[in-house]
Length: 137
Image 1 (tube, rainbow, N blue to C red):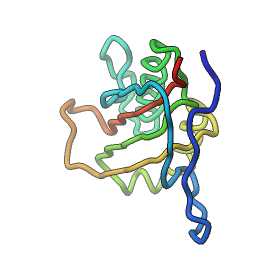
Image 2 (cartoon, rainbow, N blue to C red; image 1 turned 135 degrees about the vertical axis):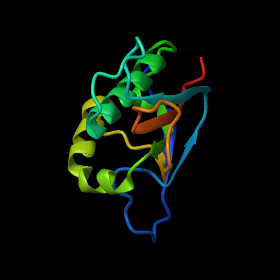
Image 3 (cartoon, rainbow, N blue to C red; image 1 turned 180 degrees about the vertical axis):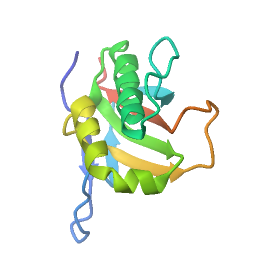
Image 4 (cartoon, rainbow, N blue to C red; image 1 turned 45 degrees about the vertical axis):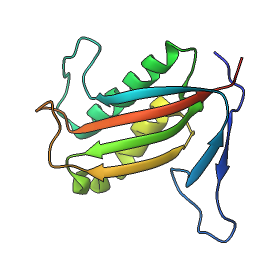
Protein backbone atom coordinates (compact mmCIF):
# COMPACT_ATOMS: atom_id res chain seq x y z
CA UNK A 1 0.00 0.00 0.00
CA UNK A 2 1.40 3.39 -0.97
CA UNK A 3 1.52 5.66 2.08
CA UNK A 4 2.89 8.72 0.27
CA UNK A 5 0.84 11.86 0.89
CA UNK A 6 -1.26 12.72 -2.13
CA UNK A 7 -3.18 15.70 -0.88
CA UNK A 8 -2.98 18.99 0.93
CA UNK A 9 -5.68 20.45 3.15
CA UNK A 10 -7.04 23.84 2.16
CA UNK A 11 -7.91 26.15 5.03
CA UNK A 12 -8.08 29.95 4.82
CA UNK A 13 -5.76 31.40 7.48
CA UNK A 14 -8.42 33.73 8.90
CA UNK A 15 -11.01 30.94 9.41
CA UNK A 16 -11.76 29.13 12.66
CA UNK A 17 -10.08 25.70 12.79
CA UNK A 18 -12.04 22.81 11.28
CA UNK A 19 -12.41 19.99 13.82
CA UNK A 20 -12.78 16.45 12.51
CA UNK A 21 -12.89 17.43 8.83
CA UNK A 22 -11.12 19.54 6.21
CA UNK A 23 -12.75 22.46 4.43
CA UNK A 24 -11.04 21.48 1.21
CA UNK A 25 -8.40 19.18 -0.24
CA UNK A 26 -6.19 19.44 -3.31
CA UNK A 27 -4.92 16.12 -4.67
CA UNK A 28 -3.28 14.61 -7.72
CA UNK A 29 -3.14 10.98 -8.83
CA UNK A 30 -5.48 8.08 -9.56
CA UNK A 31 -9.01 8.67 -8.27
CA UNK A 32 -11.07 5.99 -6.55
CA UNK A 33 -14.81 6.48 -6.21
CA UNK A 34 -16.52 4.36 -3.55
CA UNK A 35 -20.30 4.09 -3.78
CA UNK A 36 -22.41 4.57 -0.68
CA UNK A 37 -21.65 1.97 1.97
CA UNK A 38 -24.12 1.06 4.68
CA UNK A 39 -23.80 -0.78 7.98
CA UNK A 40 -23.99 -4.33 6.71
CA UNK A 41 -21.16 -6.79 6.26
CA UNK A 42 -19.74 -8.26 3.04
CA UNK A 43 -22.58 -10.81 2.99
CA UNK A 44 -25.10 -7.93 3.04
CA UNK A 45 -26.22 -8.84 6.55
CA UNK A 46 -26.79 -6.26 9.29
CA UNK A 47 -25.06 -7.42 12.46
CA UNK A 48 -26.47 -4.50 14.45
CA UNK A 49 -29.19 -1.86 14.31
CA UNK A 50 -27.11 0.45 16.53
CA UNK A 51 -26.28 3.78 14.87
CA UNK A 52 -22.60 3.84 15.88
CA UNK A 53 -22.08 0.17 15.02
CA UNK A 54 -23.46 0.85 11.55
CA UNK A 55 -21.12 3.82 11.10
CA UNK A 56 -18.18 1.63 12.10
CA UNK A 57 -19.23 -1.08 9.62
CA UNK A 58 -19.86 1.39 6.77
CA UNK A 59 -16.39 2.90 7.27
CA UNK A 60 -14.82 -0.58 7.46
CA UNK A 61 -16.56 -1.44 4.19
CA UNK A 62 -15.03 1.66 2.58
CA UNK A 63 -11.56 0.64 3.79
CA UNK A 64 -12.05 -2.89 2.40
CA UNK A 65 -12.95 -1.48 -1.01
CA UNK A 66 -9.98 0.91 -0.96
CA UNK A 67 -7.66 -2.01 -0.18
CA UNK A 68 -8.71 -3.60 -3.48
CA UNK A 69 -6.95 -0.67 -5.20
CA UNK A 70 -3.94 -0.69 -2.88
CA UNK A 71 -5.25 2.33 -0.97
CA UNK A 72 -6.11 3.03 2.63
CA UNK A 73 -7.90 5.60 4.78
CA UNK A 74 -5.02 8.06 4.36
CA UNK A 75 -5.91 8.35 0.66
CA UNK A 76 -9.50 9.47 1.26
CA UNK A 77 -10.04 13.08 0.19
CA UNK A 78 -13.83 13.29 0.60
CA UNK A 79 -16.61 11.57 2.54
CA UNK A 80 -20.32 12.23 2.13
CA UNK A 81 -22.49 10.94 4.97
CA UNK A 82 -26.24 10.39 4.78
CA UNK A 83 -27.84 9.89 8.19
CA UNK A 84 -31.46 9.26 9.07
CA UNK A 85 -31.25 11.03 12.44
CA UNK A 86 -28.98 14.04 12.93
CA UNK A 87 -30.02 14.34 16.58
CA UNK A 88 -28.69 10.87 17.33
CA UNK A 89 -25.48 11.74 15.47
CA UNK A 90 -25.03 14.86 17.59
CA UNK A 91 -26.00 13.12 20.84
CA UNK A 92 -23.49 10.32 20.22
CA UNK A 93 -20.71 12.41 18.68
CA UNK A 94 -18.06 11.08 21.09
CA UNK A 95 -18.90 7.48 20.19
CA UNK A 96 -19.04 8.34 16.49
CA UNK A 97 -15.61 9.98 16.75
CA UNK A 98 -14.15 6.93 18.49
CA UNK A 99 -15.57 4.58 15.83
CA UNK A 100 -14.27 6.87 13.09
CA UNK A 101 -10.74 7.02 14.53
CA UNK A 102 -10.68 3.25 15.06
CA UNK A 103 -11.28 2.66 11.35
CA UNK A 104 -9.92 5.80 9.66
CA UNK A 105 -7.24 6.90 12.11
CA UNK A 106 -6.62 10.60 12.56
CA UNK A 107 -7.17 11.37 8.89
CA UNK A 108 -9.89 13.96 8.32
CA UNK A 109 -10.83 14.61 4.68
CA UNK A 110 -13.36 17.08 3.33
CA UNK A 111 -16.75 15.92 4.59
CA UNK A 112 -20.42 16.61 4.07
CA UNK A 113 -23.24 15.24 6.20
CA UNK A 114 -26.88 15.30 5.20
CA UNK A 115 -29.95 14.10 7.06
CA UNK A 116 -32.25 12.12 4.80
CA UNK A 117 -35.78 10.87 5.34
CA UNK A 118 -34.83 7.28 4.61
CA UNK A 119 -32.31 4.99 2.92
CA UNK A 120 -33.07 2.21 0.43
CA UNK A 121 -32.31 -0.60 2.90
CA UNK A 122 -34.90 -0.37 5.68
CA UNK A 123 -32.46 -1.25 8.49
CA UNK A 124 -29.76 1.18 7.29
CA UNK A 125 -29.28 4.22 9.53
CA UNK A 126 -26.27 5.68 7.72
CA UNK A 127 -24.75 5.56 4.24
CA UNK A 128 -21.27 6.90 3.49
CA UNK A 129 -19.62 7.42 0.12
CA UNK A 130 -15.94 8.17 -0.39
CA UNK A 131 -13.49 9.57 -2.89
CA UNK A 132 -9.81 8.69 -2.55
CA UNK A 133 -6.70 9.59 -4.54
CA UNK A 134 -3.66 7.36 -4.96
CA UNK A 135 -0.35 8.85 -6.08
CA UNK A 136 0.16 8.51 -9.81
CA UNK A 137 2.36 5.51 -10.70
